[in-house]
Image (cartoon, rainbow, N blue to C red; front, side, top):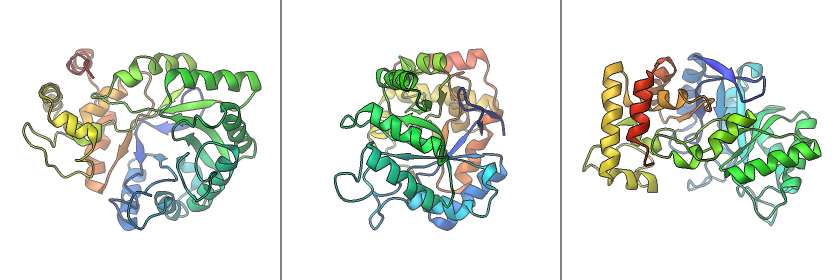
Length: 321
């Protein structure tokens, strides 16, 4: 496994990040532990989750993924694992049960620490913006967590460039901890959202980038064929999948990915990830897995070296996205 620094920080992370949204949802605790074991043994030291995972499952309340990670983490050397989690969504009843207020963040962090069975979080991220809370309040609360040693670095997810830039200015002016990482939605089939403004901002400011849904909700695994709407995926009903499977241009672009994958004798998913890894702005794509086999199918992406021509072909084939 290859490693790199997280943005301008000295924190070293693997070039692939294991996403834990499936834990407690489509992967039970035993399966999740096997996935974590396989990832750790393969050299992946970076795990990303969120406190709301997986509150949408009947019978769940949120925190299931963190709890599963915590039960696994207690038997591992803590210093060898980089744990990232997120806060923003509703976790308890009442007006302060969600959002990015000081009241919510300080309690949410304590709850995440308890579930993760650790005394610090390596990367604490705000899951999406909260326009009901002043940025100064959010950043001050996060800064307090950093100063208390409960959080080492902070990051943002789903922030537009203008808002991310504004937070950097506030942190600079008020001498607060700043966002050193961004978690955007980015893949071959969702490019403009990141590339138009966020990419140059992150490169200029030394912000690490850990894209989520790098395989376009499973479309870039190659499991979908023209005219075939069904596949073995928990996201087959997602808006992105439904849009892509009915888009002839998307299938044309996927054929280019398949051709390059065949040349490398590698799975389609690995080439899609290798394209992201060839981008100097990208730190580590977040890969999810419901089984160990799914994880093993994509780990080899870090060893694929695409030529400049191959990167250009993939970029040209998906430029409309």
